[in-house]
Length: 392
Image 1 (spheres, rainbow, N blue to C red):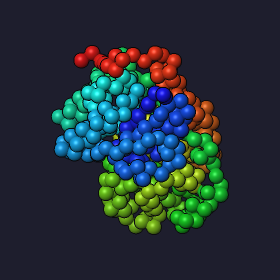
Image 2: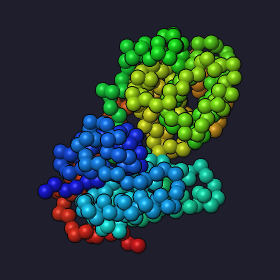
Image 3: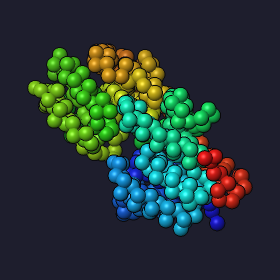
Image 4: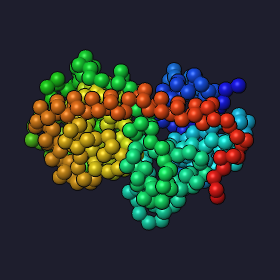
């Protein structure tokens, strides 16, 4: 009988974005399961069909009663299925999974840190959320981090101990699929036509959750200043408006609304990256910035905040430009530089693609994870349940 490996996430979007390739590769060696906060029918990615899907109530927002229900459901699933390993991704799934897997005496318990909500907070809220991340670290037997600089941050903050935190390859959760994310002139023309943007216009692109922490309000303000200088500049935002910020973005761009494009959701972000000239991620916090290397693989240079995670994804002055977090003038300067210098955009885009393919390929990251699990669950002799229990 093959060892059973179970991934736990809260959202189907997370599973499809980060785990599909891992599930496909691990299914060659293990019986793979996936726990997610949705009905199995909501999981449509063909690679995820290789996993047995379970449903548990794991919601992103804090809700004590709902979280207790989710914890009980996770515990029952783990006791019933007797997994060899459980691996969680994202904070809420990480906390509930850590507790349930520890109580169910799952031998190998792993979590991947993908950024800290508390990194930009202060006071009691920061202390509470940081403590919960430390609980996740304490209850798990193995810890992954999706960038080297995030690992350094977690160690400095005392969440991880010295020596803890495995980074797969050079970073990211799943790497970038270079066949999917690539320069595509046909897609560029088609998407621009769909959006009503000419082939010669300059397009700034943001892909991700539209929230304050992603810096989209600063992006809108910086874009407005530049767009008033020339009529051939557009801003495209692709992703769910979780912060309900579209009205504020339009207000920041008063008189320029015709050059804003909102795409609420797309399961093909590569099409928009192929259509872009400059990718923008002015985030206040980020575990790594996977969208940056996706844009890079499409040959698009990026502008990003000089924060942990993002600085792993952008080589300043070579594959894109960095600016100090929250510095509107610095963001505007970077956006203007790449708008005005076509040769620099082209050179940085080419360098970005070469770096993405060399250091962050999907094949390399997935191979590293497969090697970890085959080493722990196949090469090594598994001990009895509870043998990996942490020292509490």
